Image 1: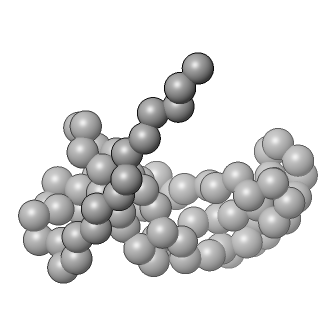
Image 2 (image 1 turned 180 degrees about the vertical axis):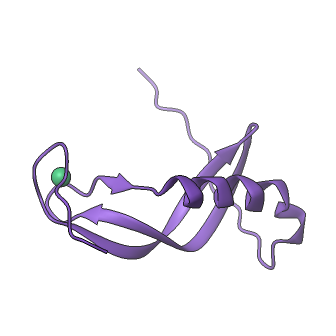
Length: 78
Ligand SMILES: [Zn+2]
């Protein structure tokens, strides 16, 4: 894949595998090892359209997830 530049800061984009917290129809699904382009300067992530489609499909099948985690939920007060 040809290197390309971040549209915000012109930093270098590198392909990485990251953990994505993906919301789908009001449900949160954590998906590991997602290939995305990450800007080395500002951290902006760039997803391929096919990758986003796969995240949605995986979220629809989240009952089959091998692992579950719980997370604390907090509210930022005044
Ligand atoms: Zn950037």
